[in-house]
Length: 97
Image (cartoon, rainbow, N blue to C red):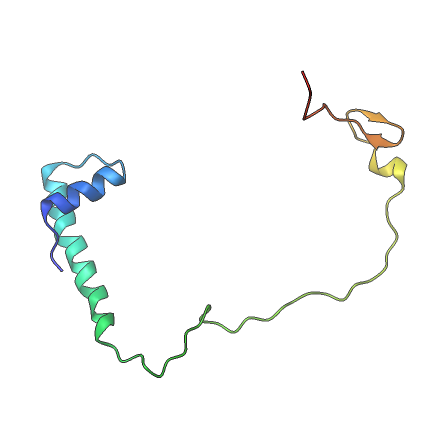
């Protein structure tokens, strides 16, 4: 698949790139070569290949749940900039004003 200069200019505009005429010639050749190489995949016989979401087998690596001691309320709110009634105090996000 051979790209035209107009194709390269359109791609450059979409990517917000300003290209010199020399760069347009260079990218026209390079992008055309890349598309030609990618087109070779259309020649492969993939009839017996099952679709897959990942090329590598996936497995969960979750650890076992263990009950552990938690922090006390004093330890949790120790560094809080503002606190009230053993809770973090924050600025209102939704306000009627």
